[in-house]
Length: 201
Length: 201
DNA sequence: CATAACTCAAACATAGCTGTTTGAGATACA
DNA sequence: TGTATCTCAAACAGCTATGTTTGAGTTATG
Image (cartoon, rainbow over all chains, first blue to last red; front, side, top):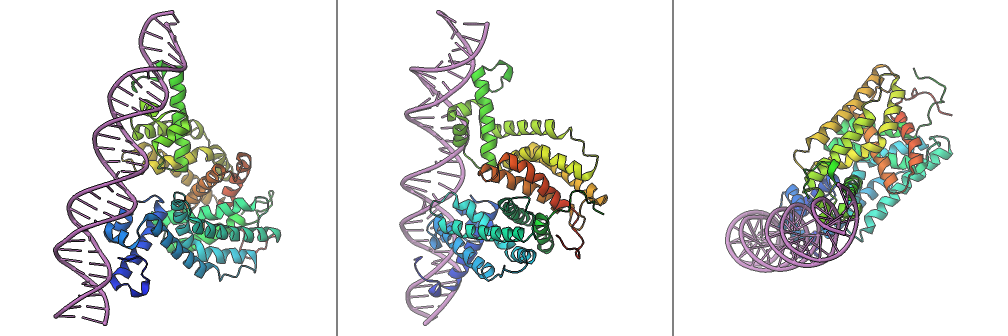
């Protein structure tokens, strides 16, 4: 089984299994960045030897999973126009990205142990920077709270997204409900707080 | 070296080392629930054999770390009077607990691999329930937003606290700054949002 | 000061995981 | 249908980490 073969000439079953392995890797890594290759194989419904037949090392599997995640992120995030109203831009970003950011999280965790996994880190850094820039712009325009550092608000953004992914993974939150609460929660995070003296109804 | 010996009759150096090992375990587990015993020993400034001299297994060390965390939590959280104004109660809870909740997080992660680590899970569940009850009360009193499930707001509470701990651990947030932004962020999470039509300054 | 407690380098055994090989059976495809 | 690809059980090798033992040196304590 030569891994240098392009997808185009793989048999149907090999293609299916390869895709299943990558998907299983992303799911398992999100839950546990140190998941074993045996578990990933099992989650993909293939044997361990088959997994190694497709990816000769953990590193190679991580790279393939990263490439797929980056490709998906590029397809979903790059086209986003974040130049309009900061609130609406943030909501658009949240709505488009919350599912995929959890994949980054798992891969980043795994990448910590694999020296050289620069691509995934760099891509995630770009995403973080993008979020941060948007938050900074919202602050400059007084659309977002500026009493807290943008860096902290960015960290909160990701914390909430990952928290949501965990809730979904553990069955406590449905995807439908998530699509509603996540954007609202992120908006709450960045909203300018009411004046200290004002009372809420 | 008999581990059944009570602390009272341990030599001073043994007491110091034992405490250092537990503390190192909590710190290391918070960063990585699967940290090796070798790393914990190193972080504690002792040899691996010394660690095993004090704790005959990973499980025993986890239990001791859990016992200490529970004891600290009890000392710090149990006396809190959460019966007053929901906003103030939540702030009190945040201010008192954010440092210790990260210890629970690491221990819970480690506990996932150790069947029987029920005490730490149970204690954490109690804490979660306590937060959730408070949030529910705040919702019932219209002091907190009720358009999102209390369960979700509880998850966000913990996500923010853990996010903060990570930021501190990685040097991006100082403890001083954390003491300011965390309570404000948690308040933002639960605050009743402004009416959809109102505009912010 | 004498002695017990404590520490730890070195070495050992074992378990679990990664990575590899082999060959028979299954699957895909022309 | 023939053939190449693909899969995987079984087995192997090597590595890492856990848990254990030994004995010499260090530290604490009465």
